[in-house]
Every structure is written in C-alpha cells, then in structure tokens.
Length: 238
Image (cartoon, rainbow, N blue to C red; front, side, top):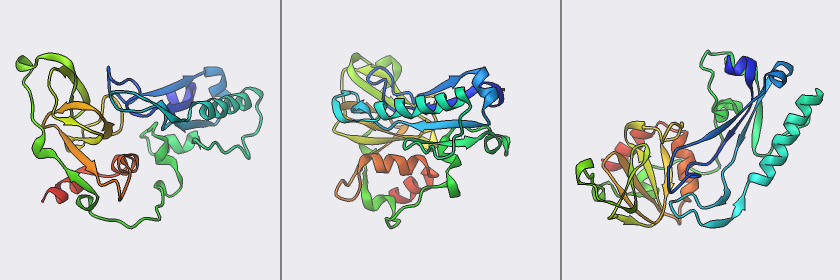
C-alpha cells in the first residue's frame, strides 16, 4: 500500500547524522497520495555528507550534499505536480525507478541502490582480500555487562550502534565498525558504519582500521554495505 498508493520519494541519510545520541541509519519518506496517483515512478536520493563529520564529534566539514539534494528533490516534485515529463531529468544524487520494478519480485525494497543498472556499481580497482587493505582490531574490543557500566561521556558501541555512554574508552581514532553476523545498524540496512574519537566497542562489532594509503574509510563502508560481509571478515581473520 505504501509503494503503490502513497510513496513519492525516499531520501537516504548517511549513518551517523544523529550522533552522538544515536547511530541509527535513517531515511526520509515523502508521502503524498495525490502525487503518488499521478506518478508511475518513485525517486531515490542518497545523501552522503550533511556538512558535518559522521563520528561522535560531528565536526563541521566542507562537504555538504543538502543544497544539491534540496534542488533535485524540489525539481522532481514540481514535475510530478504539473505532470511534466521526467525525460532528461537525471538527478546526480539519486535515481528514478518505475514502480513496476519495485513491485516485480514482491520484496518492495526501498533501497534505491538495488535498482541501478546491472544490480551493482562497476569499479576500476582490482579486487583484493579484506586483510590486505585493513587491520582488524577485534582482539582489543571487550564487553561491559549492563550492571558494570558506569555512566560517562563516551559512546559504547555494539553490533547495531550506540548502546550506552560510559566513563572509559578503548579506541581514540577514526575506525569502521561492522555488526557481527551481518547485524544492521539501528533500523537501517547497513552493517558497516564510521566512528571517530574516544569510543568503547563490545565483542558484537568488528573493528576495522583502513590502510589509508590503499583506500578511504567511506569507500570501505560503501563496499562492505553492498557485500555479503561475514565471509570476508572471517577469511581475513583466518
């Protein structure tokens, strides 16, 4: 009912926009029954930067997709309202998908990346074992039982994001965490997410330090979130 009668657009926000209070992955759904009846498409927009770092500190950065996203979303909605053709309209931050593609297999997925041509992004880079381009720091993580946790300023991470704030920390640097056994971060679809600063990580999240002369944190996160994660993690540990 949502896809066929109400949904007009999906805006995927980067994981971490609500840090330090929550690491939940969030998407905005634009619902308008009148527009949905006029359209046979749904637009998917993906915002990767909102003007602030995505770690616990949320420091201001130069990259900000919000102005471009606002312009493209507004143009898409305008065309729907006046029933103007979408031919030639190619948003740089997303894609427009026909509803029949979304309903075809019965999954009704609202992950726009699934509807790109050929089902995946191409890459000019060679494939390598995960262990060649990251250090796995799982041996340093450790849990704290709920009864033993002492309140403090530092985020306490598990497989699905921030579970609590505690007085101590284990790591103090930018890292990539991956939910154990493919656990998703918050209510989202992503298993890998960035952290920075002083954090504690329990044994339900893998801790990765990218070799930054080989790849960036963001590229690693994008690849892991589109892959079957656990075979790569286990192979590298072995």
